[in-house]
Amino acid sequence: MRALLLGLAVLFAVPALARAQRQAVTLRPVDRATVRIISLRGIDAQGLDGRRSHVRRVVGVPSSTHGSGVVVGPNLVLTARHVVWGADAWIVVLPGSSTPMPARPVYVDPEHDLAFVVVAGALPDRLPLPAQARPLTLSERVSVSGYPLDLREDTPAAASGEVSRVTRNGELHLTMTVNPGHSGGPVVDREGRLVGIVTARGRLDRGVEGLAVAVPLGPIVDARARVPTGGAAFEPEDAEHARAIAWVAGVGGGSILDEREAIERTLERARQWTSPDADRDALLAALAWNVLVELLEANAARDIEWLPEGTRPAARLLLDAATQLARRALRIGPHVRRRYPVLRAIAIGRVQPYAPTPAR
Image (cartoon, rainbow, N blue to C red; front, side):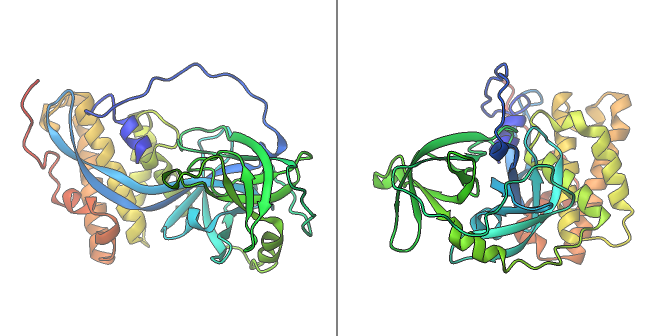
């Protein structure tokens, strides 16, 4: 959600952050095997005031979470269960990339907060999963890799510390600071060998600082043995769905207007699918709607007729696609009303559902 709001900051009255010049860093093997995982739970509706048009419009804001995972097989990712649980769609993004890959959980272990995710396509870097756990030593140095805070960041963040203890229920406590988004990221020793994955951090509201909680290797090895060998089947439409998730969630940063032509081609294909899917249609409807809203706001237009003449056909295409897909999703899958509240506004087909705010 935060990534989308930052992407709209130029056009709507929400805060923005400055973009700094980037410094090159060299990734370790563990970093190259650490991926972003984005889990989509639906699209909420939110009204925002346009900076240029002074019109209050509804935009679709993704209800999503992101975390980290580590590649342990040709197309298999290990992560924390809570990173993927309760979602309808998932994507995996490799380090240094903004290209999403369709993904799907194939095994979860709720007792130890573990999950294994299959990805559509080969993953170039992986971290070997040891056959058995080795003894750990108190105070030995370990480090983690992951994607904390901002899902637009394509380089994993490292943190380091020491093994503090193994608790009576088998959790591994580490003296280091991790942040939301680090969950599911690998914990490695000095030699870069996997010894666990991050599942939680210290509760600051309870005075717990500088503590990370991890699942040690033993339960991970046991869970890996129970992962089905068949994997998951992916359809060609899943790639389109993955790109739509990345666009809506703002994985690549910037404005979705920069991707308008590619999005329009995706929408044209989606409208002709012979096997529609309610959740996929709902997501694409929200995507088309958000592009339309940004297009109107970029041109300080109250509605489509206020746009430059050459831009109106594209705007009408976006409006038609959004309303058609929203209505189809609501018709074939009434369950999407709960997870995609924005569909009610889109199905009406009005680009200014609220009265304009006073000029500033």
